[in-house]
Image (tube, rainbow, N blue to C red):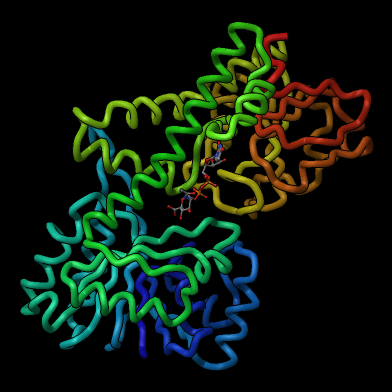
Length: 416
Ligand code: SAJ
């Protein structure tokens, strides 16, 4: 089989490499020349465990090549971003998906399979993608097979989950479902669940919405408990001892290009009905300001203080800062007039991010932990020796070992 993947980001690249590892000839297409060059020189441009080694393997076998242009192939996978629009309900912006389809059309031949992995609003495959392909002269289900197979892998565990997660194969017709399943049978060991495209679209969106709504419940609990003088983290631990309760973990907000984006795709299609989903988004979006308010209380005012932010990424052990609440908080602290805000993040390769922990905390009045990187589990005495006031505010409840002379605050004891 020959496969063209369009989009070599967090999903398209690991997916391409996984197919190539399993004997498929893969052309990975991306509009960014520097990404294409870097990959063709054997170097990945994102952080994901196991991905660099896997790229080296498929470069050696010659099964993977990156390019800025598609080629003729048996199957095409679209894995391009689907951001929110700037409209009232932040509806899905399909411009990258639709332009990927348009660019692919000149290369399509009879019996090809077109798969959209990008997360899309319900009915997108039927109402937007299918008409474009029909206009190009194809009959879907007869001489071209169209499938929505949403990506559902967790950043940080992508190489494992690609193989072992089950996959939803949303075919536009019965023949499309079968064609799509045959592609993923190449390496997927989880169940292949065959359904129609709109059920696949909605299922994917509800998975992330379920998580976003549950996190908002935990975040709201923190706000309630802070007001009432109750330890929210203890409450979560107690309640979760019940066999049918699974409260999620509160935090400084919800980030990434999935949970913070996808629920709006549902809201935009049915705003009158999707009230809880919208409210949950609002609660999670409010968390950065809540954190900044708490920082002001802890410090007795932010002005003239140096604050050190630990972690900028949207979650631990990744390098992705897209929609990261930590970035919002970093910006809000600066805007609130802090003397200096220094970001320390061992995973983020940006000039302005401090890599030396001792320099980052020197003369600082607060270490504000915003991301659960493993490096933050244990903070040594020497690390914090230069602080002006030795205190940690840990919004992720990740710091387990810290020097004795440090005052430690988390979401469980904010009211004290
Ligand atoms: N978070 C919390 N509390 C929690 C869990 C997460 O505050 O209890 C925060 C994280 O810190 C982060 C955000 O939520 O800011 C999202 O993190 P995540 O680990 O829940 O999910 P993502 O965005 O990395 O990946 C999700 C996954 N979806 C589900 O678990 C239902 C993944 O399987 C999807 O493939 C991915 O979205 C996607 O691409 O849609």
